[in-house]
Length: 56
Image (cartoon, rainbow, N blue to C red; front, side, top):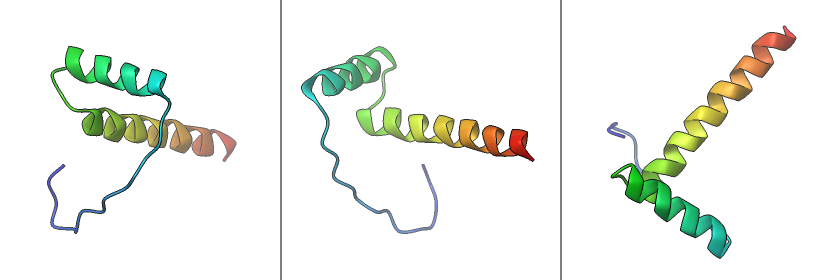
């Protein structure tokens, strides 16, 4: 995620089960838990935008 903006660090608490799932996804995708969460947020954003456009 390369850009010129300052990076903001967040702290997130998750259940052991969700952490395990994130680790599995990261491992199988040869990526990081951080990148999995970034992609999940991007997908959520697309879904929210589509829902908003559907209402218009």
